[in-house]
Amino acid sequence: MISYAAASHSLSKAIRKLSPRLSQVTKPRASFSNTTYRPSLTSTISPQTLASIQTLPEVSQALSQNNEFALDGLDRAAQVFEQFNPSGDEHKAVKFLQAQGYMQLFSYQKAVKVFISLDKLDLTQDEKFHANLAKGKLMWEQGSCDEAHAVASQLCDEAPQMKQSVSLRQGTALNCLALCRLAVIGVKDVDMIQFSSKGQSLVQQDVASQLREAEDVQDLLRMASKILFKGYKDGKQGGVSPGNDPDHCLLGLYCAASYCNQGVGELTTTLIQSASTNRPVPIESPMNAWRNALTVMDELEQDELNHLSTKQIIFLKSTKARVYCNMAWAILFSSSYVDAGKVASVTEESLTLAAEYAGLALKINDEIGNEDESLGRILCLVASCYVKAGSAVTAEGLLKSAMDVLKESPNPLKTIDARSSIVYYSKLCKSWENREADATKYEKLALECNDTLTEPWIGASSIYSGLHMFGCVDA
Image (cartoon, rainbow, N blue to C red; front, side, top):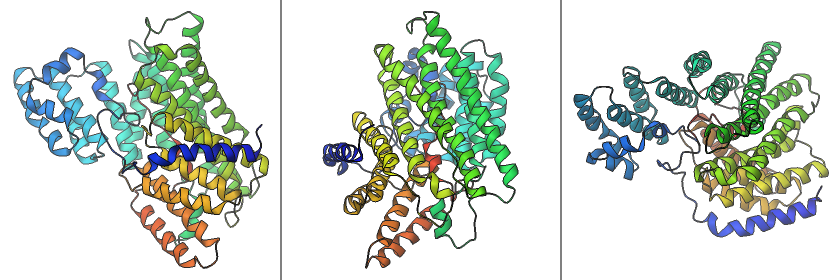
């Protein structure tokens, strides 16, 4: 294990390399090419159909521009193809394209209307599964978790009956179901509890019920990871070539993403146990899940890298950075749930590990040019390492950069990250002399940022920004 001094040096080197790019990072963008966080519905469109629909100027405009006006124009394109061939490939393709565009712009109400119209079309089994998975994610982000749960339950019933890619669909459907339930479990953020005057608590009054639900979610995610891992390993042991079976690499990628979610699910159980008993609970179980994710990804990079598309490589690296962030978060903040009134205590050995993980996430983010827009979260974690190591000045600069990168977003997970950057800056100011006014100012801003969220995301623990509801066509 490296020393903290070595980890700190590694972090400083990564930050210096990143510094010129920080000034270029602007408000998170959304485009058809950036689909790391969104199920790409256009992947269900064949190249021939995609070429066919681009004969209409409205389609070409929507593909080249990134705004609601261009997407609204697809209504006319859909009407043209509907008159020509209702529920034909071109008609459905335009609606899928429109749904994806609205989702990437987080224009939820318009996206919902498109999904309602898609439900009326004669979709294939595969198209219906992709559409419902995307719809489930949209509802989950909106906070409509009961509706999302209903969609996810239907997906879980349908997945075993699919004619192909059964393991892939079962694993993604189970993840969707588990994350819908995980969001409503109600583990709150320690700092937001302290900032708020509403008398909230870290856990629900019925702790036993909350703990049972967390354990059920944990089991669902374990099952999903097991199904995806078995599918991936069976193909590998059977000598499957990615060229002959495109699902092989996808099974590995989604297995890693599932292990990433599983770790958050297992940590949720740990946090509830810690908060309800006021005793520290080991975090080895979630750490093992995240190590499993890293093992799968290391294997993919070693054996399958030449078979991965650019999009799949970005998905892999994004997932790896997310796992490292989750591991750093667990080390830095889990102990704060034992006693919400105290600052989380971290040993030098643990801080060294957290710094190493945060530094690796920062390095990976630089490799993919912040394609997944996770830089803000990473900077918050790197800054937290410096705070706990006593390097407050360095931490302040990093948190200012994080606040510049992170903005409130219709995506609740990004808003949670934005809230964290403000929270951490407020706490840092509070620890310095003559900075009480700044601390109060940023505490108020953090509460305002939190109020822009909808339930169940209001006050939610910041570990939940480490979740990824991936789709069968994400990579």
